[in-house]
Length: 392
Image 1 (cartoon, rainbow, N blue to C red):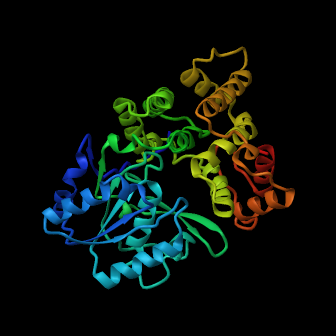
Image 2 (cartoon, helix red, strand yellow):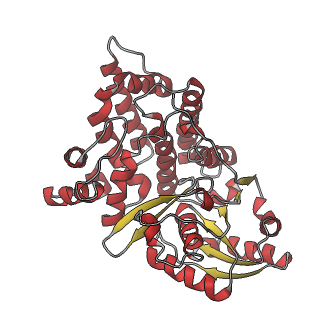
């Protein structure tokens, strides 16, 4: 196992009607002028946005609103938020929504005190030393951004989707009411479930000796998500299933399942970011479309690890050799994706890519053939091309 530092400072307020506490929580963390940041019409239509604003007003907290965040959140909206916050002298940012809204809020929080271009952080040209406090009222369990140190933004100039990690942007608090997820469409629920699974699997599939306790936590989390995802297909208003999924989303990306693993592999996320940047696909669906091809390409680096996954997650008996067990586990994972109506290849995702387009994806993912990705098996640009091609 690898030595590690575990840091998860976010205060979680979980349960029915928990959003009623939002105003008091903002005051607790010294917010006096808030940017309420949100996405489309659902926050308004559901009445949640008005409820949050009333909670702020009840505590005498001033606020301004900025909506319009879209999936694969855009740098242009971040720039708009930075300008608004500076103009209105905002000192606290409250994201009302899912991962895209939270990621956009974090980027704005980095940008307000920074004299340069906020995109510098995402391109590795600068490291943030200041950040406005951020918090969230979570409505979509998926990205885990409510407890993570990361943010992912898409720059329309060049269709680049990049991530940045820094502990300064960890949410001060996260309000989570599972009831607020009842009306999520099945597709959005399934995409969120996939993202939650992948955040755990990215950390689970490493080619080193790991901690038994971390493996057990990861395996239990994955089994719980699979079980409850199937319930939600037929019972979208099942509070307990919604609660299990919501809490799993946070635990999958707050670092807990990475303790002792060295941080994880993250190849699938890197590969998917290029799909999201170029073709604006839904993140969870893109991950599902790529994972099986990645797994079949790399499993032979440590088939025993994939065999453990197959046995402990899907109760597949260990065959005479680890390879057959590993391959059966990969197929079982894809069967689960199919059962929740997720794609398992790029064609099912709606993309029929040419060789030239696949080359472009690999060229961008490899930073123009200057880097490798992954730790389970290190992948260069040619490897990336082969995985994208296998996923067709």
